[in-house]
Image (tube, rainbow, N blue to C red; front, top):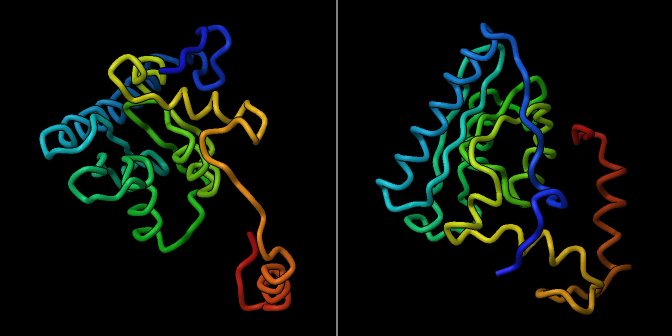
Length: 178
């Protein structure tokens, strides 16, 4: 298992100071995310839950379903983002806040960015997750290595042929731009 010093950890932020009224609302949404994490454990998934909130209202909530669904992408944050996008009928969750019971893994972090969520509150840290066997830190560490030393090897293939789809994307005005 890879380890990283807490002061060097790129995946844990700092505590947030909020006014007491705001803090109570934030805590309520976080408690919902934690309840979802418990539901995940009880239903055979991982101990992770997430809640998407917009304008002070819960839009979607979900828990980890990796094991029961046999889907390695069925993390709580991704599931909640998918549900929120369907409910709001958009791929952009700009203006939404995500509450998650644990600091998001790299995949979820990317999904949060792609969904344009501007604020995330989390409960457990990535180092806490590492302590119970979820070693997301190893993935972050792996990215810091030169490409030839990484756990997964990447190689470009058919780059010129693949560019045709990008050209078609640019030519097609029917697509909503990111």
